Length: 137
Image 1 (cartoon, rainbow, N blue to C red):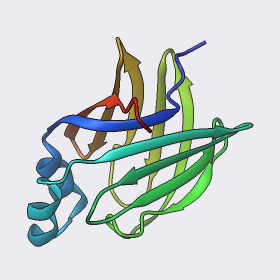
Image 2 (cartoon, rainbow, N blue to C red; image 1 turned 180 degrees about the vertical axis):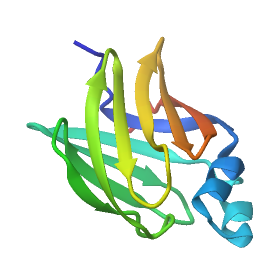
Image 3 (cartoon, rainbow, N blue to C red; image 1 turned 135 degrees about the vertical axis):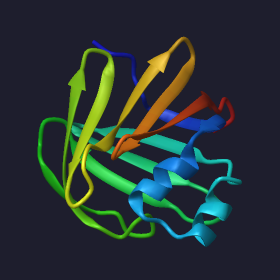
């Protein structure tokens, strides 16, 4: 069984967010703000459902999903697209394939040592983020 992703996590590193956002077609103004943000991830599990929140002082985003269940996602406040998504476990990684007008789009979360890792990818661009667990949350 993979390690639990649940908890509150604070960003410690963020590599190539701008390249990833360019692949999504996000405006230069929004990219300039986004690369300066320190994100917080809150991941909860309620039965078979996961709730993943990305929080910042600029924008918040929440996605709810069941592993192995395709669902419709509207990336409101991000790139504002309607996509289909499917999340599944691949070994110790929780991997999401997002199907829509952008090719090879998705993400993967996993725990390595005591850190939460997130890779976001779209059309050949990969953003790598690392988070540490917030002991006070």
